[in-house]
Image (cartoon, rainbow, N blue to C red; front, side, top):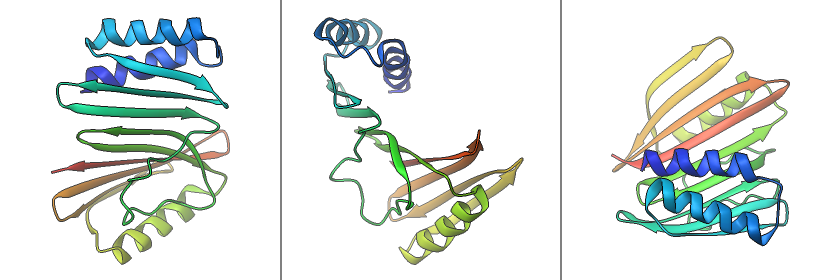
Length: 164
């Protein structure tokens, strides 16, 4: 699956903003070439939406200003507010969500520690270095990794949820 993720992100970065059917077809062909998997690409409404299937199961990805968190995203995973969804991916192994906010890393990190614990998640690791925070939580048969970092005044939050 990492091969698919890398191929999807590189392809999106190359073609993002084009919005024409020819570009959608070109991205679909690049995904097929890189992964051997069929995918359907839709570029519209300030986002790219990709859906496809692999041997492990189906995947979806949404990137851009109108990116959306999957409707079946676990409700016990805190979504920071105020934030904007920059990218969202659902894979057979789990989810990966990227958010942005103008709030500082320390505030976001403290909020995540409080909210994840209140949802019954156990903190297994906590690292703070160079203005960045990374947390690892476990609950039942799932693991959640939360990475928080700032660049150019914007705080980026990456949530990755997977089965153990």
